[in-house]
Length: 155
Image (cartoon, rainbow, N blue to C red; front, side, top):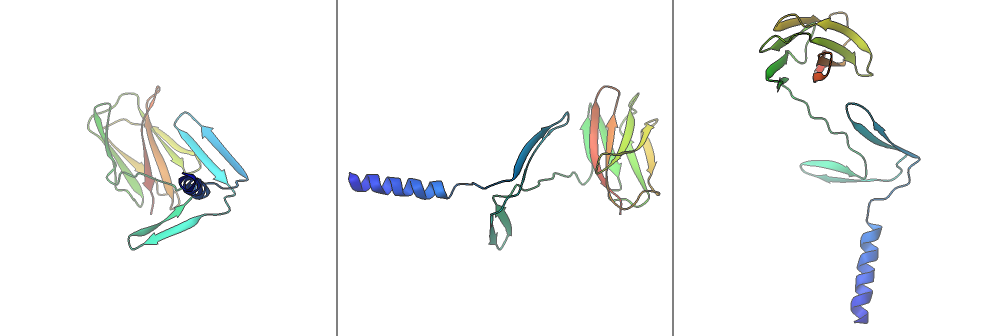
């Protein structure tokens, strides 16, 4: 019985040492209207596992982004499409039916509002010739709620 107890304590200690732990200089959780972000600063140690299909960094918070390449979505019974994406000079915002009292808002990646216009028809051409090559966010909203936010890329 004593041997089983010693083996159990040895395994417990081994697995406890293998758990995720790190010394961080700072951590925080930011909560906003549209979501929550958790981050850590100052992680000193991590491991990288590699195989023939890829690699993963254990112990590091990995960014994960879901991007709808076709940018077609159905919101409130209305199909919304943005194309071409990536684009060069202009972007087309097309909807299956006209939404009354809706606007589009164009933001850069730091959240600065670059353009705001009313959506007046089912197809709206958004000129972006003067903007530099970068990623942007196109938000479609009415006075009450955000209908859809789409990441767009100017090349």
